[in-house]
Image (cartoon, rainbow, N blue to C red):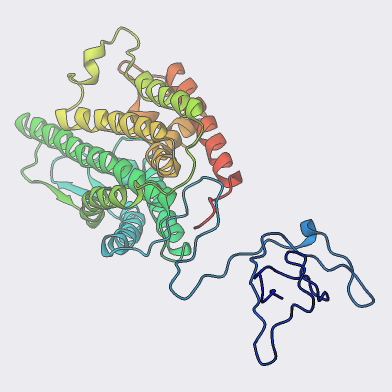
Length: 394
């Protein structure tokens, strides 16, 4: 209540103004009493009673301010991390997933189909007949390498789908790495099929000139060859699209930098080890020799270069996309290493088909150390990713 003489506030229940001493300082009859509104700045808790228990301020849940009609709500403070980037896939993202699935299915189908057929009336029975992937002299573990690449492509496509259309950097990295890894293996298949046909033709012509008979020679490509070549080309396109979709920042904390750097060096050791010559061979034999055609040598070097470059880049990115890139690109190399080291199958070829001068069929010790380190580091990083919490969305 306000004194109508001096304008000062009179405590509720009193009739004398403490400022001017006016008795019965209430306003005249018919004049409304003036009240001031004092903004409450402190928490007011009930004082208790028969129906209300005392409540301390720390027991009251945090209250969010209610925005006024024209006021923009202020988001709650986060822990400092970037919010999850929830975005629907673009047309390129959908095309990438669909193409990865197509390449995966085509690669699995093509890996079991006929690659080439050689026919001739010359007496060269060791060369005549149908050729599948494991008949090209690239090892009895060659065919399943294509299956591994296909499965990784399909897994990447499934992972993107399970994210309800949102960004999944690891899955796109897996698709990119697998698509890039498939290409040099397709090139090596092409070179090996040509090399077998060339050797058969040379043998047939030699026998014919010596009077052994034979006038007809034919080398025909099979359906599997065409399917795998198409899958290899499309795999590179898919890899480029996946890199564009998955290499964007997903707002998560980077992986352990020290482990990633060591992993990059491990990739260099794993691939460089297969270039080390043995038994008097020369380093230059990796790039040109009298025993293999230039396409054959080039495809082998492409296997090594792809695994080294993509593996190193993937580790140094230190994120989920890079980890997927490493797993996709290195898995085929790891398969050849493990099967040759364990002598699984009749003739499991070592990574990149062995070193110059290698006759044991086993990977070089430097390769073994590098591959083992890369696998262990990749597993540790993958475990850390599964244990890490996603950032708080804003």
